[in-house]
Length: 193
Picture 1 (cartoon, rainbow, N blue to C red):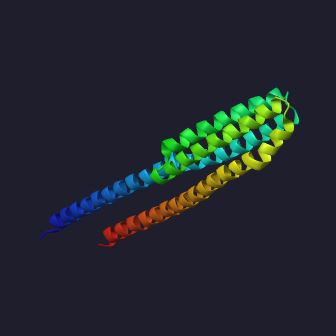
Picture 2 (tube, helix red, strand yellow; picture 1 turned 180 degrees about the vertical axis):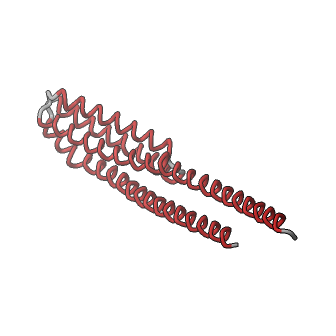
Picture 3 (cartoon, rainbow, N blue to C red; picture 1 turned 90 degrees about the vertical axis):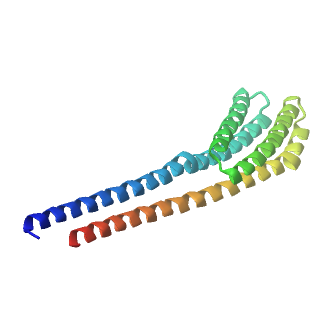
């Protein structure tokens, strides 16, 4: 075998190794892209939606209490209505990206939220009709318990989602590190082979 032929075979070998490296790179890149897309388009949106629902739930309670202090507070009524609408928008967004388990909990949350909203509406009606004592009693004895049930479910879901996102981020980091190591090994083998 002459040197020309040996160089040609070496060149073909390096070309094949380069093609192999490119295939490995593209496969790993596609996998990483899918993982990151899921993290950004689903997991993060669900986490943000749950946080928004919690914030809007607190806002409805604050607006409710402001109306109790001043039945004529139009701004508080608008804030109550807007917070409820924003809660429902965040809920719809969460449902649109949720997996089956989270979707079931979100359906339960929707039922509990509606019960709580009706209780808050009753408190508002009692207060605005001059029955402040009855409104406060209903708020303390019934609505507060329902809000605590709602809040507990939101917090449980938030904690679960935070844990899931954290695990997914860690998994992506390990995957990227492994991809770099794999590529380094393949290149090292190719150069020394």
